[in-house]
Length: 120
Image (cartoon, rainbow, N blue to C red):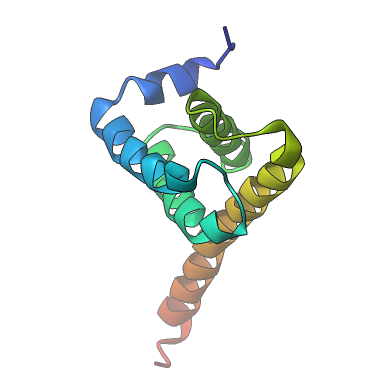
């Protein structure tokens, strides 16, 4: 049995969220392997996780670890992480999380600049 954090346990108890995520995982799993062709679907999956995790009082620095834990847990649950491409999958997940985490920073900075200068 896999040990998971208390926060992840709370997230997994949200049936509406899990149902939405399960649909995305089934789409990713249709060919029974995760590869570079699944990156857009992984981005959507991770974005949804990010939006759901933001409901909790978690520091910005802790969000990537929790998202990684959540995605890895869900993909393992569906036996989608195979031993022969495990490193590739973990790298894809990590890079997708970095991209998702970067996006809000850019958006927030743009909003701050817009509000400061009102030049657009």
